[in-house]
Image 1 (cartoon, rainbow, N blue to C red):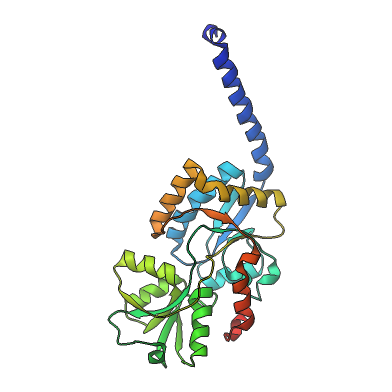
Image 2 (tube, one colour):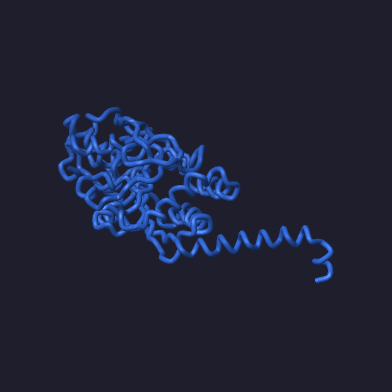
Length: 290
C-alpha cells in the first residue's frame, strides 16, 4: 500500500487498465449470451477441420465476444441438407447458392483472403487417359453431389462434352482423392487448390484433364435469425484478424495444417461477390442442382 501511494502515476495507469478491462468484460457477455453454431462444409477429415477452425473460433470468442461451436457433418450431402434446413447460424460453404438452399436466406459476410478456386478433372500422371473423351464409360470419382467445384462444375463439363461416366462418391474432397491415389477410379472431379495441397502432402503426381474458370473461395455467411450486432462483430473481427499479431499467428498455424499459401485471413464480402455461382446454377446441365 505504501509503495502504491509513492507511485501515483503507476497506480493511475493501472486503474485505467482495470477500468478498460471491466468495460470490455461488460460488453462481451451481451454478445456471448448465446452459443451460435458454425457449420463447415465437409472437405477434409473432421480432425483436420477441427484443427484448422477451432483456434479461429476461439479467437472470435475472445475478440468479438461471440461463442461459436464448430459443426462438421460426415459428408458434403449432409452439410448441404443441414444448410437447406437453416440449421447453422454461421456457415463456411458455397452450398448456400444452390436453388434448393437459397431460400434459407444465408447472407455472405466475409471470404478468405486467398486465391480463387476452380473445378478440375484429374487423373494419375501414370494413367493412359489423356482427355475427357478417354473417360467415357469409366468410373469417375466426386466428393459428393453437393460439391460445387468438385461435382457441379466437373459433371457439367462432362455433360457438355457428351462424355458419359459412372459416378463414384467419396464423401469429401480428400476421401475421393485417396480413391484416386489407390487406383480405384479412373479420374476425379475436385477443388483444384485442395488437390494441389493434397498431392504435395501425399507425394502424388497427377494430370489435369479439364479446369473451370475461377471462382471466389467459399464464403462465411450468416443466417437471418442471428442478431445483426452479433453478425457485425464476427464480420469485423474476421476482417481485422490478419492485422492483429495474435490473429496472424493463429492464421499462419492453421494454414500450415492444410498447406495453405499466403496471404492469410479474411476480407469483407457480400452475396453479390458470388454472382457467378448463382449464374452457374441457373444454367447448369446437372439436373439435380437446378
